[in-house]
Length: 246
Image (cartoon, rainbow, N blue to C red; front, side, top):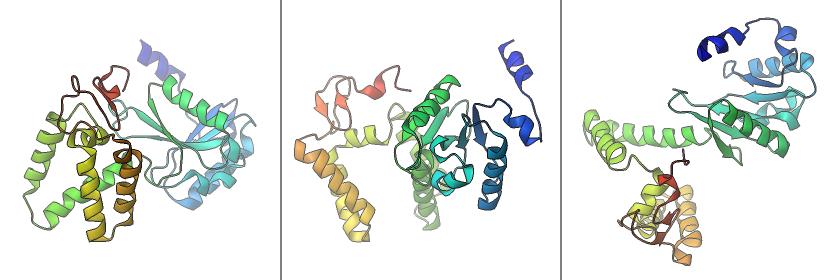
């Protein structure tokens, strides 16, 4: 009944003026072509009420690219959804430098209201959070296959055993705590210098400044439910184990 009632409330139109009538929030989902997006925002702005908030579901472009075209830059930000929206129910909210903070928080609230877990992006980042991690994962996996290091099945088998099964209850930073932040620092510092990768070197420096220099070393293989330790999370009973974390 709930689903049927929701479907009954949906309306479809190709008329911009009709679509914008009394609208409170707009989600732009047109193709990832700059000219198409700019034209769409200009058409929407011509008929939208001054109070209407514009959002973009672009997965590759930044809101600052289109802020001026919206005609309401202070009432514009990104609200990006992941594929498999019912299972991966995140809503990544990303402001541009001109977004009104109150509008940013209202979009965060809207994401919660429609059943999403809001992910606040405080700075513009191509790929947001999910795709920044996903691209790195995909590239690493493909590199193993491209170089002939192992069979493609063993790439997935390793991931499924080590991450889905052994560490399925934590994310990358929780895993870094488990490994130990001194080890994470050593790896990033060494590989950063070897590969002349400034991002790795900067990440190593961040870990040293914010964790190692403050004697926050992570779990280092300990028990997250029993051992006392501090890293990205505080142990025992880290935040990612709590029911309201997701």
